[in-house]
Structures are given as C-alpha cells and as structure tokens.
Length: 353
Image (cartoon, rainbow, N blue to C red; front, side):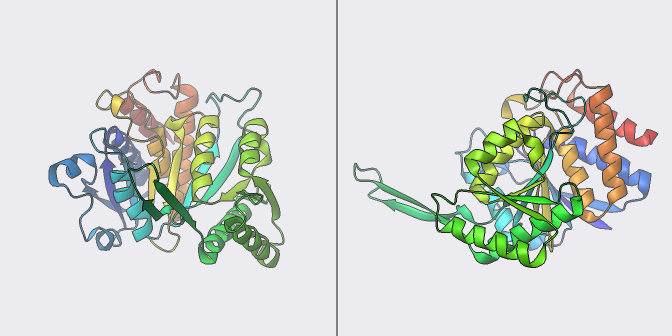
C-alpha cells in the first residue's frame, strides 16, 4: 500500500492534480495497485489567511508518505519568492530531494518549434542537482538601499552533492540503454572553482565505475544551441541547479510546451515529489482550459519510480493515444476540449486496454 501526499497548491494546480488523481485511480483499478491519498492545503491561500507558509512539523509529516503529488506553487497576491522559497525549496531540502529529473520527450502528434525534428530526434533526460548551487540562499547585502549597495549570491557545491547526482545520471543512462551517453553541462572556462569540482568528479566516477558509458562535455551556452539544432545528440544530460533550471525550460518548449512537461524531485532513498512544471497559471484558474497532461505525466513518472513499470507504460500509452486521436493542441484554451475532458479521455483509454 503506497501513501501519497497531495498538494494542489495555487492557481490551476488543484485542477490539474484532480485529473492526475483521476488517472491514477483508473490505472490502479486496472492493475490492482493499492494506495491511499491525503490532501494538504499548503499554498498561497493558506499563507494569506494564516501568515504561515508551512507548519513546523511538515517534514516529519511528509516522511510518513511514499510520494508527493504537487500541482503548482505561486500566488499573484503573494510576493514572489515567499512561497517558492518557503514551500518548494523547503520541501526539496528537508526531504533531501537531490535529483530534479526532467524527461524531454516529443510524443507523436505534438508540435515542436524545431523545424525538421520529430519524436525520433527529441528523447533525452536532464538530471539537475536540486539542493545546492546558487539556490542554497547563501549571501547577503551590504549598504542595502544606498548608492554603495553590494549584493552577494554564492554558489555552494559539494563533492557529495555533485557525485550522487552524477552517479544517478550514469545509472540512468545504463538503464535507458539508448545511446549509453552522459553529457556534463557546465561552464568550466569561467566558473573555475565549482566546475573544476564537477568536471573532476564526473570523469573520476565515470572512468572508475561506468566504463561502458560514453562521457561528453558541453558548456551551457553550447548545450542550449545543440538542444535546438541537434537534440538527437543527447541521451542524459547532468548539470547543476541553476543551469538545470534554465535548460529544462528550453527542453519543455522543444517537447511541445509546458502543458506536456512533467518533472520529479527525487530522493531515491526517501520521499520524492512529482509535479507539472508549467507553474500555477493564475490567469487560467477556474476556466477549465489548462492542459492537465503534464500533471498526468507526473503520475506516470511516480509509477516508474515506484517500480510499477506496467502501470507507467499503460498511462504513457493512454496519454499518447489521447494526444494523437483526441486533442487539437497542447496549448491552454486550444485543446479542443476542457481540462476535465482531457482527463476523462485518458481514463477511457486506460479502461479500454
């Protein structure tokens, strides 16, 4: 019996999570997967009412679950950074979700802005370090608000943090058995301290433990260029927190947009969290026009990490069937059906299998 915590969050988050849960139930009934869910009201509305971002015991509470399904965090009436730092980054750090896993996969029938590229060209995974780097919040101000103001933002990188992320990437390349290649995305020519550590670790771990996996390196600017020009060159990309944040949004665009892009914040030894990566999209809240497939794909990722491969494959096939046979577009308001109707179509496809 798996215990799943559900955080609908802000904006359209609860709407897309509802469709993910609907599909989770359909797959579970089909294959006999046993689970329970518990909902948490953490997000902007709760913060505005109580002034509390998270309860003090949030980490201990969530450690009793096997996974977390998150809708979105971000409220138009809350200053940017409060919820993102207070909820998203707090959850990642407290639960040591040190891997951000972002598949970049173009499904048949989905339009990509890359001319001449198809599903056979766009199928790679980005492994992003998720708890260190520039996002640790290390730094401060000196003489704030004056002409002599100084702002310092420090990137903190550890051998342990880099090594466990790199090892996960090599293991994933071996598991995918596609190109058996890992590309380190960095900036060794300018960021000489952090990326000296990352590059040394990458080659030491790769040479000693993964002689069957090809090692490659690309500066982050070149990585962006090749993701657009030759995405078929990539199998698994591993990188740090800030570069991973940037290139995964580029990845979402080339795979068809935010409506189809899902992500996982993983602690392979603990509690992982799965989410659509498009944000709360408050302008679409309550209109029933947002694309829920990214949230449904997050459930598919959760099944995969649970080791429920039959369930994961079943849900992915249902998603692909709906994309190719039912939907007009991945864009909000242009799908040819409502948010809930997309979820219904995926459920129908599952039940026919």
